[in-house]
Amino acid sequence: MSSTEQRATLQAQIWKIANEVRGSIDGWDFKQYVLGTLFYRFISENFANYIDGGDPNVHYAELTQDIITDDIKDDAIRTKGYFIYPEQLFCNIAKNANTNDSLNTDLKAIFDAIEISANGFESESDIKGLFADFDTTSNRLGNTVPEKNRCLSAVIKGVAGLDFGNFEDNQIDLFGDAYEFLISNYAANAGKSGGEFFTPQSVSKLIAKLAIHGQSSINKIYDPAAGSGSLLLQAKKQFDDHIIEDGFFGQEINHTTYNLARMNMFLHNVNYDKFNIALGNTLTDPQFGTDKPFDAIVSNPPYSINWIGSDDPTLINDERFAPAGVLAPKSRADFAFILHILSYLSPKGRAAIVCFPGICYRGGAEQTIRKYLIDNNYVETVISLAPNLFFGTSIVVNILVLSKNKTDTKTQFIDASGEEFFKKETNNNILTETHIENIEKIFDEKQDIDHVCKMVDMEKIAKENYNLSVSSYVEQKDTREVIDIVKLNAEIKETVSQIYVLRSEIDKIVAEIEN
Image (cartoon, rainbow, N blue to C red; front, side, top):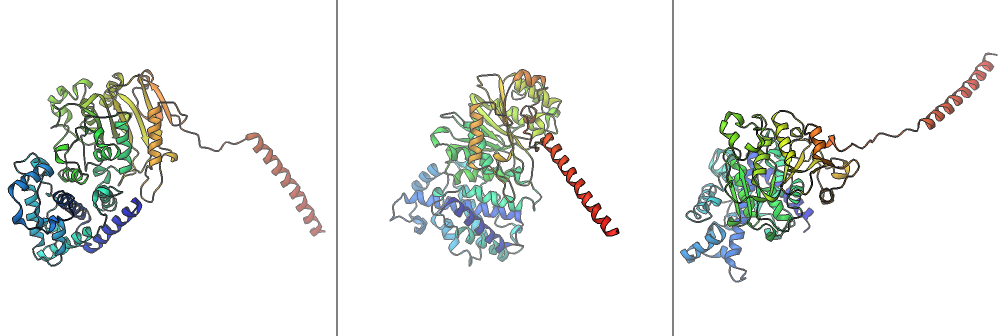
């Protein structure tokens, strides 16, 4: 099955599930149950395949609990990070979901047991709370137990109906595609901006390629506003595992998306010892600061959110913010994230960050921080992307590329907002593989291209008051029709002459009629 066919099948099945439970579960809550069930099915099949060990004569799902020894259980948890008994597997629960009068409480007990299985092991922090947003006893599912069970059964049966073989062999990003489809359909109705929770896969792919461009290997990759983990996992998808040596790291303040990010890691076969996603406020309670700096950082931090800023006088002495000599404004934390990212970047590293265009030209503290970045030669490239790439907003965004190992003092400005750099879709514009390759090629070559790319000395940027807007340096192509004024005058003269002849003929006809 091709990727297009798989994606269409996935979306059709999700929509079928939605119709089954329509009116029972709010759309935004429905999203959590579908994603949670997808995750439950995946880890069940993944765990069963691990126990089966490729032996066609072993079928873990058909075994009974009494043959499992403590040694078998402990070895499995050390390897996979969790344990699931045969009767707890998704396939066995799905068989009788329609007739199970205690389905909701059985599921809760199973999810609790999976999380508890990791207690005391290295994977405990990676497993704990994974199912917190998949509350099977919540009144969001219905006011009575039968109502709850009916909704849960519909979702389980729907997810069980997805026939893609092994998750690992899929042509699509199953979890990411499901999330993207759900976000695009429910974000607006829920009064939430999809861009707050999800970076579209095509943009994620470009950012990952920019951050790791030209590097044969990196120690590890980091996202300080990890969301659902899509940016980190695009790096895994684009590059061989050996290129990212020590794994994937991130921090996320939203508990729901923090859980989704950890689920997403498991769904992409990133073992618990190869990722570390932390929960908390990156700006005021940063994790990983004492770790070795990162060779690659990718991020789509929230745009212009409030933060404590100058209300906490100790932050100006924070090693992340002190070098710039000023804190980001309290009402716009964008540059706080950027300075945090810069401080976590290794001497050979590169960071690719999605930014709101306003930070490129506003004055005050933001201008002072831009001055610090330019004067210290940290800004490698600023890319202006096409509008309407993100769900729930038509906003135009920039990608800011930071580097600590530039070999010259020029900054590259790329205007990738023209129609040759995106494809129009029904709801949103997208970047195709060709668009991404073209942008990466321009980024790599660092050559001036009329109306597309300009290499600018830091002295000129300083004269422009450290303005980093792409439009300030890349001249827009004049798409107005060129008019040949000499030819136009000749055509007007000829037209006037014809009108004169026509009037003479009309006057003759009128005169004959009068006579």
